[in-house]
Length: 430
Image 1 (tube, helix red, strand yellow):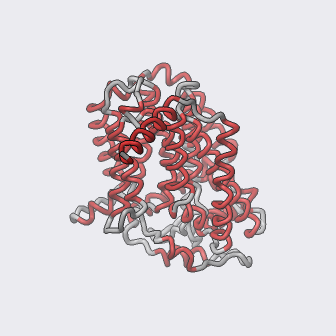
Image 2 (cartoon, rainbow, N blue to C red):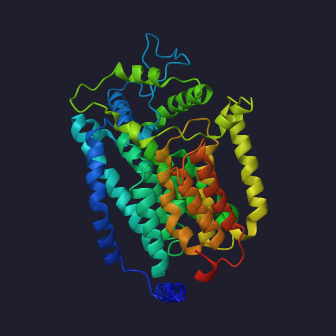
Image 3 (cartoon, rainbow, N blue to C red):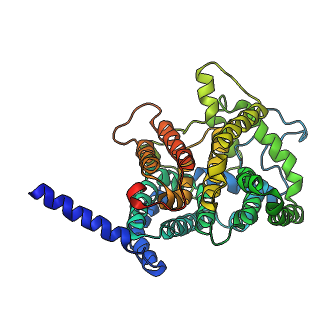
């Protein structure tokens, strides 16, 4: 009797929540704000115990840029004779460094605090757009719970803060595109070419719209590209593109043999002598090992590919196969265009011959609300399972994070293979 009563109660609650509309923007903002307060307190503790190593290297690169010195190579007597081991650890694009000039002019302690505030603000904005997408209260509650547990309070985010990374910016871009997927169908064609100035992978993220209607897409894409190109020229960053490309090729050829100590040594030659440049052992408690990309697994089987061109060919082949298997469903609605765009973007990361880290996972927050809104049950359960595995749940084992992300990517593509995606009832979906 008790079991029957419990099932009846849960079923009734389920149906009521499924019928109720989602929270209004102001109430959602309030809920997320309350949830964020403890997160901010712990994040502040993380900030106080880190030097934000990646942000630190970008600030060094920006200060070198301002002084008209190479932001990517260790300077030698002959600047034109860069040896293959002369990169200094800075991997941000010229525009990304240029945008940091106001922070680079600050004392590093103040710059670090400012960047932390930017990170947390953008995380909140991304969570807000993500949780605002679902139309029904039940889906919205599920989105909020997943957002809080697997993104805002996860070790992946603590590592993001600890390192001073900027991947939350890209999650924000996808959250905005997802939210406006049916309100402004051409937003990705405007936003992504500009975002490509900081993260070049966004160029390929426009592929679904070009394949659907290249003439219509071109009307929006070309002005955005023209704006991005003009910005590059006016800011003078176009002159640094060959040097940036050369530096990234060095990393591509030597990524598996490149020593972190070597990078640290090269950066320490240009130290910022300020009190807050310190690092605690807190990082070790996050268990923040590398998140391997494709090149690592190829090497496990004795396949060594050092040229980025070969990875580009492999990526093109995989994308072609994925498109052939699901072209009709991808092109059937705007939500699927955004989902496939995100899939292309993440595959670009995986096929790049460079190591990744747990903080890369924050990017999945940008697509979460859209996925929960449209996903069928099996893809959504697979996606949540992948998130759990990526966080070493229910227990830890070798390559668990990578397997978790692979499950998430498979779940995303599985959703693209589903039929009848426009009108998905919650009883048949998540």
